[in-house]
Length: 174
Image (cartoon, helix red, strand yellow):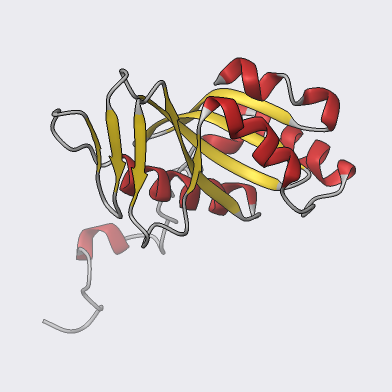
């Protein structure tokens, strides 16, 4: 899928691959273009039936995985970091058949043959300067790091002799 997303560059799209989300894993692809920002998780279909539900994704007879839930959380974090709406997307590669629950409306489902035409046909949401600004922000590794904790504060010295009284004691009271 990465090559397909990279091929969109002449049409004004920018792609970042393997974007780290500290404490959450990595976003496989962050695709920024005229139609908006897409947080894409790639799922191998292994030439089997793939079923996407609200919370879980099942490929063949394997155990269901929480990919829909994970991509929603990753997109929410990316939205907070970039201060722009990020759409969650699942790219199911090489599945023999793909079934999506009708209740899955907030996640964009992509497949290799139709992924790039679908993105190109989507309505325009971002202008080229916005795409470049968001791409520059997303490309900066510091964008994705949590804010640094404030330096420890040092206590301010009190009047002379106050150390002997101890904390919370007032002079003259016992």
